[in-house]
Image (cartoon, rainbow, N blue to C red; front, side, top):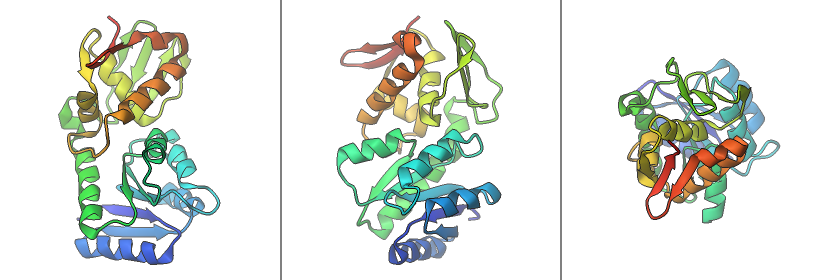
Length: 233
């Protein structure tokens, strides 16, 4: 293995334990205690995955997550949250900020490694799942929307609209096949892979945000009760 995993954890004991577990498994590891250090490091040293604690001094984990998703260089980077906040609402907030997955503390070595493998596997397999890779030149034009996933660009009436990486991929899944109905599970599978360990409720949260950000164009995303969502034909 040559993947470098960035561990962002202010608790020294947990940081060392996680780093040791990953190193023993054969991964390369970079470990920092603050969000500021992490953002600075990623500017000069790319990582294959980030393990991110939410409760950090200075810039907290949610802010770090949002900044990584807003940067085109790290918009597709898998981010797995390490959090003692096990409540569903806290998990949804983290996913809504752009996290790929989460692990609730305390966690076992096997759970940690399984989630890391799953996140890396999902990233490696995305081009084979019928969605364009990040450097794809595919352009989707439907109604008054233009979507370019590779460049992380969404235009509504020619004006840019900011979406997170996950939000843009969900919109792309729906917009590529107007009129088709997708279940929440199908959307999760298309966006993150079939081993993505979150509940379908996260899709609802993302859809609400996409509609809000689209403004009047949000009406094109229709809810099919008891089934899922579709993009209006």
